[in-house]
Length: 313
Image 1 (cartoon, one colour):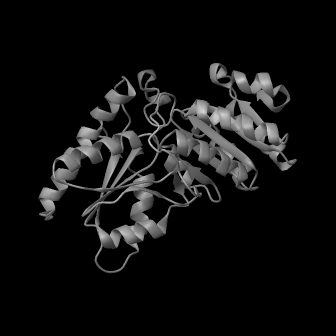
Image 2: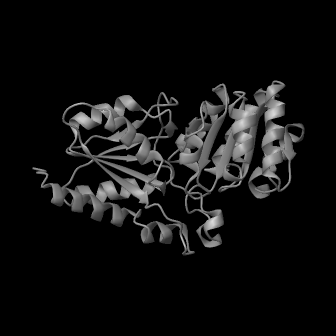
Image 3: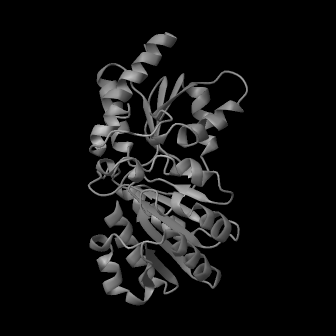
């Protein structure tokens, strides 16, 4: 995803000289093509993410469209006051990019695990929050936040993610994308954990359960219309996120569901169950330990269906 982001941003910046990229002293292997081709549109702010964010806000208020780039929690949680006061409050055209959402940097410990960023960023007024699920969505999301006026947050994976879409037509901020139709169960996913949701969907189908599958590249504004439609059509909605289940994507879906009147689906939220990881390991390993792998998703869905006595025939 990060390579896709950089390639897309280079194309954008070549056409718009007001685009500027600021890094917090990292990503040089990935960002090298940008600074080599566009040296006057690139700044290394050093390991000083608060300063980077305020600097970006100042440039944006002078007419620039500024992208800040760092890993995990550093461009978000470390600089949250500057994002709130300097960027969001002024509706500044700052695009905050996190590479390494969730457990991407799992072996570096909880300081590098980005598992509260979606909830914190979506709580800030006027901040648009995107978490693309694959390379195609990452490209469209990069272009979308560039075109969108105001402060945005883009949460990326790291590298090696699968290309799941052949192409995505009519990508829009605030719109979910239906991947496949199904019955009784609908699986909603946001971010790079989409690959686990796809595999879980295929495993469920082999077991006689045919879930519908949706990806939500936008967490805020959430696609309320799709949620409402699915709540009426399906018995169970499963939300999958590589993030704390408190305040994130599952909570955003649940907020819409809570205001519905009449018969509606049950919600099963799959994510990190309100804890910090005290374990280090690969992203794949930690997903499984904390119940977000494809096999664990299948187990949880089957458990709820059995508990609810939902007839799938």
